[in-house]
Amino acid sequence: MVECVAFSAKYKDWISIKKMLVHPDTGQGEVAFMLAGIAATTAKKGYQFAGIDIVSLNARAEKTFKSSGGKKGFANAITALAKIDSSGLDGISKSYLIDAVLEQFGCSARITQEAMAEIYPHLKITKPRGRFSKK
Amino acid sequence: MPDELIFEAEYKGWKAEKKESLDAKNEKEASAILFEINQICVEKSFELCEPDIDLKKIESIASASNSASRKDLLAACKSKEFYHLAESYYLHCICRKK
Image (cartoon, rainbow over all chains, first blue to last red; front, side, top):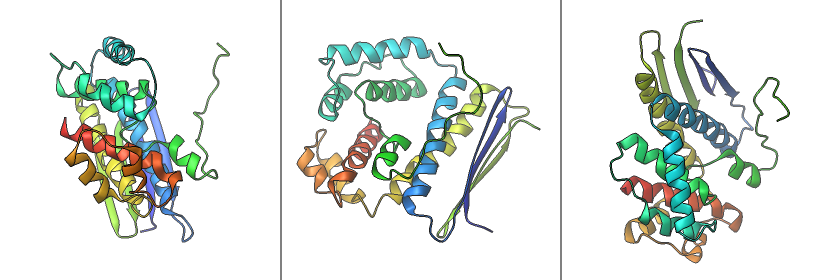
């Protein structure tokens, strides 16, 4: 089998296809970059399909950010993590809330394509295809 | 085209494969499969950064304390350009404990 990383999904009206072939000169960073892209897609859609209340969780995340001083950064994110009020939340909602709080602080608990592209400028983040309104 | 999820990866001896038909699955079941793939990708992407960041060292910092200094995390990086990856792995370890 040719070495590759491939993800394809079709569910209702959602379609996603991500594929890369691994060549002898493909670096580990490039494979990690691809996996980071798949991780971002699967998390976004996974939360969306989980039926959690994303609007109220985003509001909780914003409240946590503001009550922790409203300043971005790793040190502030760690302090805020300890203050997260996840009372009454199921596992998946709690997980979303943590991700949303970290995002408010400009942090992430997974490798992002943006972080990899900063290290390896030749890695380009693929923009979604299609036409978008100018709004 | 049927409703399905396919994830296949092979790289330097590492293999992962997940194929699931989603035809008879509801959104919560589809979500659970997506998170299985997500977990594989998140873990492996950190593992592939191992030459640049010392995962074991970061794990030990995370298990010892709920806060980490920039100096500690920089000591786990091959060079300072990889610092943000170290931050993310530290947060990943802390969040796993929660």
